[in-house]
Structure formats: C-alpha cells, structure tokens
Image (tube, rainbow, N blue to C red):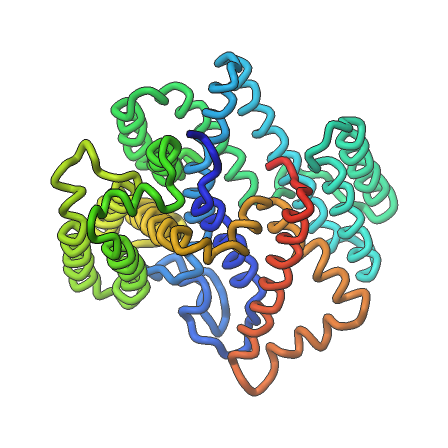
Length: 442
C-alpha cells in the first residue's frame, strides 16, 4: 500500500501553522521569552549565540524537515512502483531541487524589493503580482505553457524592478528555509534511492553525516533529521498507518494506543521545560521514565519485534533520537539552534517523530486533524499566502496599521492574537485551495 498517510500531512500542516504564528507574533508586545527563539529573546530580539536551550519556536523548522523526509519514500516509491526507471526518478529529484531553488530566489528577490527606492504601496502590489506569477508557474496542470508563462512573467517583473527601482540580482537574495529544504530534497532523495532496500546502509550514511558535522558541512548536517524521517516513512508506507495498524498491535486493549500517544506528547512537552530552563539531568530522568512507560504500555507489541506495529516503531525511533539529543547536550555545551549542534539535531528529530506518533493516534480518532491535513497537502501555498497575499491586502486596504497596533496594546497577549489571526486565515485559505484540488508543485 502506498497511499498518503494523513498524519504526515497533518504534521506538515502543523508546521506551517506554527511557522506563520511565530513569525507573526508581535515583537515588543511584552510576551515572555519562551514565545520567541531562545537565542533571540526580548527585549532587544538580538542574536545571542551564548544562550543555550530551545523553545517551541525552535522546533518549527526541524518538524518541517522531518515531515519532508518522511514523505520522500511515498513520493519516490510511488514512481518506482509505477515502473519508472531509477535514472528517471533521479531526474525527478533534480527537477524538484531546481523548482525549489527557483521558488526560493523568487521569494528572496520579492522581499528585496522593499530595500529599493520603490514606493511602499507599490511594493505590496508587486509582491502580490509575484505571488500570482508563482501561482501560474507552480500550479499542477497539464497546460505546461501556463507554468512557463508564470516564470517568464516573474522574470519580467524583476527586470522592470531592476531598471526602474534599482533592484539588484544577488545569490544572497533567497528564502533560506526553502533553499535549505531544496538541498535536503536533493541529498535525502539520492540517499533514499541508494539505500531504499537496506536500513543498515542508511544508518551508515547517518553516521557519516554525524562525523561530517564536525567539519561544518552546512546543509548536510540537516540529514541527521531527514534520513531517520525517511526510515519512518518507509516503515509507514506499507501499512494502514492512519490508525488500523496501531489498533491491531494493541490487541485486546486498543485504549493503549491513546495512552502511549499522550506519553509521547508528554515527552515532547517536558523538553520545553527541561532544555529551556537548563534542568537537563532532571529532563533526562523524566524522558527515560516516559520511555520506560511507553515500553511498558506497548509491551505486547514490543515482546514480538516481528509484529511491532509501524506506529510503535516510529515512537521508539523518536525516543531513541530524543535521548541521544539530551545526552549530547552535555557534550555540546548545551543545545542550540544557531549554530545548530548535534544535541539540537537529534533532540528535535526525536520530538518530531513523537509528534507524528501522536498525530497517528489523532487520525485514528475519526480524523480530528482534518484542517491540518488539508493545509499540509498544499505546503507551498500555505507558506506564501500570509506574506505575499494576506499582508499586502491588509496594507492596501488600510487595516495593517490597526493590526500592527495590537502589538502596542496594554495586554501582551494581543501580540499573540495578531499571530493567531494570520495563522488561522492562512490555514483556512489553504484548505479552500486543497478542497478545490488546486495544488502547487512542491
């Protein structure tokens, strides 16, 4: 079986929601430090590399990488099962990389327009026009001329901006998140193709990446998150992972799936206390206790490894990665997102796997995460809609000033309300596109 796993889409949808939320939260509104990146706390929001710890905001990007990695076996496996040759599938990986790079540089240069002499109101119009160009360029359609016209129109806008307002073309003008994801797609896709039949070789690659981390090899280090995620994707690909497999593994006591789901969620939650407040020994002890509780509640499945369900294997990998990350905290001098260390890579990869396990349980409860699933199936639209559509519309209609004024109100949580409004509108609009079966290549 090679159908979509709703929980992976839900995990991606959750990532997009949290990504929009943390970017739209009002700076200067008086919110506590744990509502922002650990290393850019209020009141100055400047980067402090000496700070150690993580907040929920620091988790967002690793979840995005993990959900991307977990989807690779479905995307490439589907092509192989259709009879595509290995070289043709490898070409598809390269094409996906090129599309993401072009997407990244379009977004980056769209943001760079604000630093030119272009009037502010015109910047909003141009950014919305660029989004329409991306829509035409990336929409999944048999009319390939439409995709080509979209890219051509984007190039035309940039040339006009260059000659009219001095927009400079520079490789540094890119969306760093999308650029990094493009490299993860390229490297992770090739590694999966080479090791798809043997986890041992993939684990050897992970070990090699860990060793390469000490030489500061940039994008390669994020494979520490992506490659274990591809293993999770392989585990789930051949099962009915939207709930039936976990219920079957629980045997006569199906309620254990719910119990272990909340144990996994608790293991994620305590990291935002233990690693953030630097009570690392206590955090390690509590995480070990939760791992033991999970093993005890899942003992029927774990006593027969050959029958261990896909969901349980996902959680076991999550606990193993998380515990490794906590242990590396002592070696790395504390977990840190920038510049990220092995503690960060292992711990956040493990937390992502445990969140996926929890969402597998949510999906088994009549699809309670339906909105997240719909949003997660259209990640590129969800990623762009807030800053390229919603914000320009707010500015052009005059609502931007009122909206930003929420951050200056007497109540700090109005800054959170600002982020929630934008995140919920983004999710809702993306769900409409998905319901209409309008998807972007991603």
